[in-house]
Image 1 (cartoon, rainbow, N blue to C red):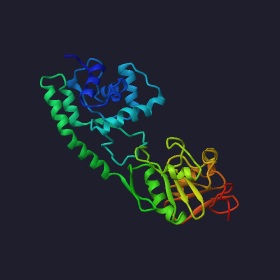
Image 2 (cartoon, one colour):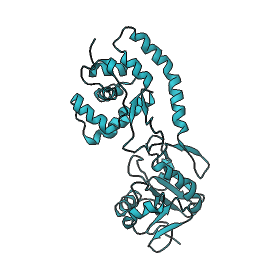
Image 3 (cartoon, rainbow, N blue to C red):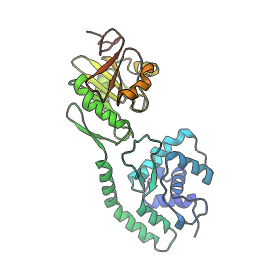
Image 4 (cartoon, rainbow, N blue to C red):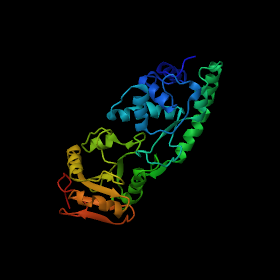
Length: 319
């Protein structure tokens, strides 16, 4: 019986039904670290400590000798950890399901049932235990996914379509932007894009945006919320600035370039949860933009320009 090693970790992932791309070295090391194992440790000593992504990478380096660069963090999260979660192998934020997706405290933990299976991996009778685990997994996933869905934020788009966003973080502000800003300042508007903080369930009508002259990759620097008001031919580019990301001078230039071929006039809006957060960024906000606070939804702050709430230099620049 061999102790913990990369080859066996990959074998475990294969036997549990993961596709080839999730049975590579990277995913094997992530599994070993989540199990709290170092080279040669007995599988019976596996544990399931809650670990954020950065400590996982640190332990892969310190315990297993593979040094992943900081820019591979998203790869580990999206190409290993997300699949582990979807398969029920790993639990996500069990200590706080409402935690923001982009929080540095977000963490991952080997599921308790999977942990029991792996602790006994090199013991007799493993084939039958794996079969029992796989037979039971659909029911476990259904229950787990149901619990995750209960924690999501329901959002009704202006047209009546209903979507959900992952809980916590800036999505609370994005929900307020749809629920409170749009009825007041973009009546009859169509939501073309609404970004989910975890990137897994974005709403994006690419064809609609293309008809307005803009082709864009949703994985690029698209704003958090894009709304088109047809009667005025205005395109609202809205940023949720709960912790970062208002329309400052740099962001204004980026968005102007990104939407430069728009047939609609562009309106830039920085959205904040309240005025105390807005004050932190007030000196940085770009001129000829708007600022809105969710705690006072009936009011809008206009930063200079030749008119209140409207485009300034676009094709629909009209009074």
